[in-house]
Amino acid sequence: MQTKLHRWATDDPGRRFGDLFNLVHDPAFLRHAWERVSRNVGARTPGIDRATVVWIETVIGVEDFLGQLRNALKSGEFRPVEVRQVMIPKASGKLRKLGIPTVADRVVQAALKQVLEPIFEADFKPCSYGFRPNRRAHDAISEIHHFASEPVNYRWVFEADIKACFDEIDHTALMDRLRARIKDKHVNSLVKAFLKSGVMTADGNREETWTGTPQGGILSPLLANIALSALDDHFDRQWHEEMGTKRQRRRRKDQGQGNWRFVRFADDFVLMVAGDRHHAEALREVVAGVLAPLGLRLAEEKTRVVHIDEGFDFLGHHIRRQRKRGTNKYFVYTMPSKKAVQAIKDKVKAKTHRSTRNQDLAELILSLNRMLRGWATYFRHGVSKAIFGAIDAHAWGRLMRWIRRKYAGKARLGMPEFKRRFCDRDWRIAHQGTAFTGASPVKIERYRYRGTKIPTPWTTEPAGT
Image (tube, rainbow, N blue to C red; front, side, top):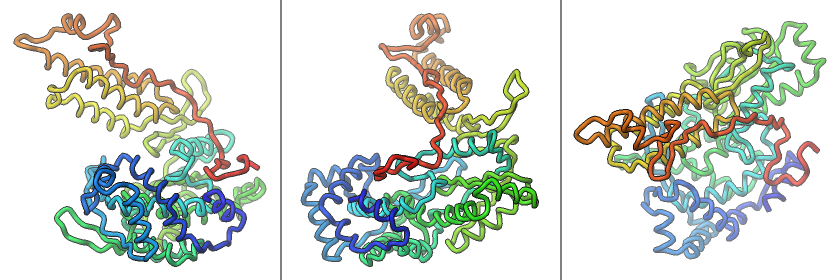
């Protein structure tokens, strides 16, 4: 059914879909939605009703729960309840608002997403990569790398961030973009009900949600992409009308105008510019003009223009053009940003803090290995080998000091004794058959740029046809 929806939306870009609500409460869709919710890492996290997935499975029963939910949807009695608000600390020291829906609301949101996503994926532009099936952060990084490298040479970068994007999206503007494709009033009303469901704060007060879509909901990333696709549409249309051919780009260059390409991952985006600095600076007003009708604005402290030789951070990577050692040739390199490196060091520090000395050493080594291997896997496509080694050296030092203090006894544990008891010949720390390996064993490999023809899960034709 999803494949059919996607094909119909692709074949007729102007089609408005009706009679979708019956899919939302279809038993197969609800069952699939439940499976997704129950497998999610937040399955044990309750909403304001304190019900968890395990509680529903053991007390109510999944079939009865889904049957009750289906009947409530069909009769029109279903009403989303307030999300439970929790505050999550950000790396900057500020707090991020996270809204946790009830399990029932999560299942309905998942069912809604299953119906809406194949339709809107037909409209979303290739320049968008965040929260979309078969797309990931590495695709956005590789596209920026492609634009900044020879022979494309888009050297100026307008990097931007939207201030409180999920909190400030205008509901009217979002619903207008939704209704452009969906004419089923029941579906539109259900989406609007989730937007207006309100927030229950930690002190028990209810707050209205006049704008935004709460982070933490399954449907929220898709709704944010529907709203922010206004940016994608604007720059995609501008590209095809004014810069789509070599002749057009050459003419604009001869006339003193710039050319640019747009790359977005959720609410983080960059414009890669061929021209001068003032061409990139002029895009600030253009972007602000597109965002204003959506109720959004740029975060000034995170919006700037830089040259690719200065480098910039995007999605945890530092992207910069520099001279290759031993040559006079310049290449664009990606590597973990200083912020990402410091973040993983802080996590290692937390795991090896003195308050954790009651933990078993083998368990600590295993936990460090998993964490560092996961971090390195994300950054394995960059120039990261030396950084992996530095992270491992930092972790080894923290682990060594943790062990020496834990097993000091009455006398301090000296290094010869430490090596004899806890290290092999290569000074690799090991205990009870568990050895510290860290990030270094992760293989560095180039990420293959996939271009704009990335198939969706519902694409029936080969990519590029």
